[in-house]
Image 1 (tube, rainbow, N blue to C red):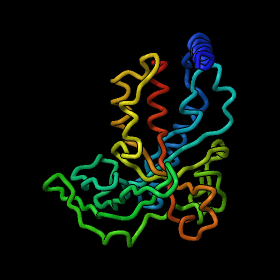
Image 2 (image 1 turned 120 degrees about the vertical axis):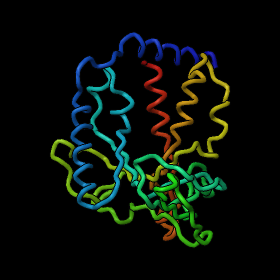
Image 3 (image 1 turned 180 degrees about the horizontal axis):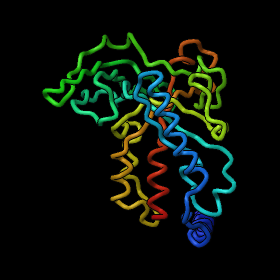
Image 4 (image 1 turned 120 degrees about the horizontal axis):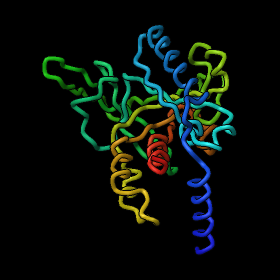
Length: 254
């Protein structure tokens, strides 16, 4: 244990002493801006609310001297017509502006493998503008599921998929696209994380609160043990905490 802590301290000291925020706009930041314009164009073409989030190494290691060694560009996106909620939670009555006036809501249900879940459809939300909230109609339990899109894609790299959207701008040719379902609440599968014992008083309580309030996402990834199963290969998803990782990394260098 002492050796492990010594290594952690050495790495932490190196990062704090040698890494700095870029003073000017980086190439990944330029690509991110280009990506937002691309998604805006796609939104018009397919008439859907597409909400992108830059993730992966570019989002987490935008500091020197790590950034020159980042070789790809990852983006996770969700649709404004879909939402996930922890199993057993009531349907939301209000949603952020990024969501559509009708939203399909699925519950996050555990599979037999940790971190991998299924998304049975539970509610259809319809916005009532005069009341400023959504009304919910229930689906029959466990009769419909959100299907991950990986088996439709022409190319797949883990949860990243290609072939479902128009071609990328040439400068974004190394980008992986990850289709996700947004969850606005912290999942019950990670309920112990906010109160877990922490060394060195990091993250502090304010950062933990920001992480929890950011919720999570569910990405279409199938465990290797389940890829040959016809049903599970289409219905299995994996919890993603990319938003939490970005908050934690930014808190360390803010």
